[in-house]
Image 1: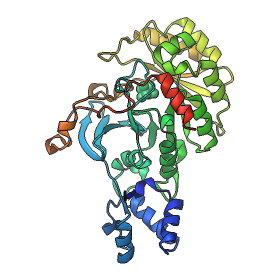
Image 2: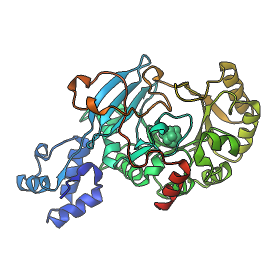
Image 3: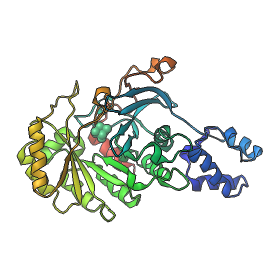
Image 4: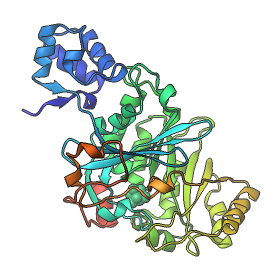
Length: 384
Ligand code: SF4
């Protein structure tokens, strides 16, 4: 019988599991306290649980951890960690320090099926989605036991490898655990989930009422251009995507962030800026402009600084909150779109010399490799 990973189990399920074993409900709270507040990684550490209970649980449960294989530190302070998962696959997580924030960028999948043309992660296809435990453990890695989350990091963005809404159940459960009092107790206002625009999933995500922030990767102002750079636009064109954004439940003063990667002579013209202003009409939003990070193997170029500035100014002059975001961690390939696969990482897995050393390499190939975004979209919707 496969063991249950306690980091995959919510308080309610834990309570049920323990009640079936004749244990009172407060034992579930105790277990959660050990797993999330004390970060215990073995039942033996949970010393205020009766020995007999620990032994019974030990036959059914365990606590998973991620194995850090390599850690890279950028000149700008950005930290990227390569983790090995239990099945040997690998993911990357990035910690981005800024003056007033320390943001963890978590992965939700090994690879990605969405196929954005400007993204390295897309090139390996999707291997598999992460379990909630594997998402939560990325956060716990940056939080020393006993410290409040705010001491270690201030914000979490679901913007690493993978499309969070393509791993709908994993993402939703991870957020519930991250925000619950019995879990990590992190304010949902400090969490942002970024999507490429899986419209049906976005609507379902709104119904989950998680109160987290939403970011949408828009990147174009016409369907022709967006489909060319983001094939997911074909099943979910811009008008459909923005209609679901308009219907997305927002709290007072909450805004949707639209991410716009500026690609030279693709989506960076004044005509694009004008269309973007019109598209955003009636939306409570802000725009993050991300000048493209040129990457070998990806056929796009970064616009000039003047072009970026003119684009931003046009948006600002026409009433939009628009900010130019310079990528962090470019020297360690930790910037947007730079998290990627490297096929021959496996021999390094058992080599302790690679712990806390250098560059990134990701996962093995799997069953969804080569899947088109349209097929992926069909699968995304079919799953619900
Ligand atoms: S940009 Fe995001 S959604 Fe698009 S392929 Fe890359 S990881 Fe997937």
